[in-house]
Image (cartoon, rainbow, N blue to C red; front, side, top):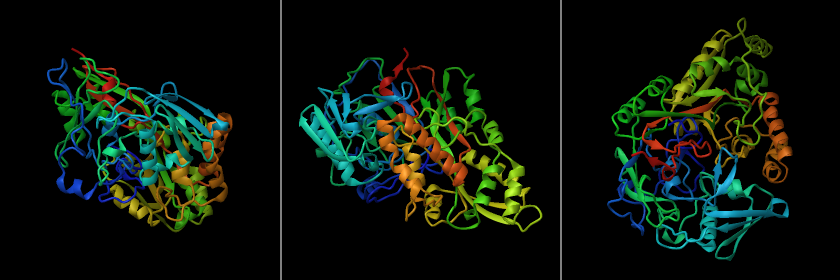
Length: 544
């Protein structure tokens, strides 16, 4: 799967034993695995949970998900920042979940919440009668311990809780957060990473557990096997069970899209998270198969090296922006991408219509000539890195290389695994860095904090931009979002113009469109772009 910055992209996790291949370039958020897990490679991540499913249920069908990459890189719900989101979202729950249709957080483990003191205090009322897979009861003290442990671990996406000053549990059903500054904590609590509520007492010394509150718990885990992970229904789930629901999930790792497509047609898998345009068109007319297509919050970034090399000259960066064939690229994607308008995808606060980029080869040539390059000047050599095996990124590179060749620019593009690309990027080893990005929680803040805020040691800010005024504007975003959304919208728009037009730190060619294929007997499937590639299987029914 072509997941961004992380889903194989190593999130900035704490002490880790193994690092996953990253998702930024088209990979996965990185993460860790304990030495014990890496050595054994089999078995559940924790002791067998209470409440195993009963036998002989009306619907014993298994929902078979066919990812193209290994599923689990980190079993610790506090530091997980990678592929395992597709499984953990069925094992764990947060206080809230984001409803993409309504564009707001909705109840999950919290049934209601209020904010006060200008967005600096939040009170959540917890759902009653909820049990962890360990058999322990969920109460406010348990939820407090889970969030505090996640904050203390400082791994993965724990930064989402940075505004929190203290957490109190005045009674068993009430959780109160006091913040250092106003922030949209209802959205934060719906994050796909670092917002899980889990039984801290069931976490072993290596951080392994599966003691969440979700509808499924771990059946088996066999690292490196084709069917790597299976989940089974948790009979004690607070939502209850109906006969038509799937009580089993299997994750069958299938690296080749064509193989996954064949297995779907044969009825051996239920869900293929991505098809290329040709197979997607075929799936639309195939019996016993249905398709789903929806816009995502995941876009492609071309980050320019603002700190060193030829691209340090803003005229070079502006020429590169102008040379990208945005319309041609989107047309060639054949429905799997739509033209971007700024950094923030539509559907999130901060989306900015009217910022769509356009190719302008005349402008590109004039800018290059003013910098001493171009057709009648010395050849300009530039280096670019992108995700190995990502056909869409390769298409971008092919079109851009061809356009620049006509301007006497030699674009030396290297496809790389995410970890290799990221390691090179942190050393400022390229002029252009291509990667995907999507938010950790459904808010545009992630693009600005992670990708463009100044940092002495680059992580994902791979344009290496350092600007105190931009940093100040970025730091103000959470409070504006919580207190004045009109001003927040304007701040996001101004920042995007600054970063793209005035600083030319980035080009944003397109936003991905998800193209899924699944068995036609699945009922109730809907994509939620806030949780990339996640299927909430409990919400589905199997016809017949």
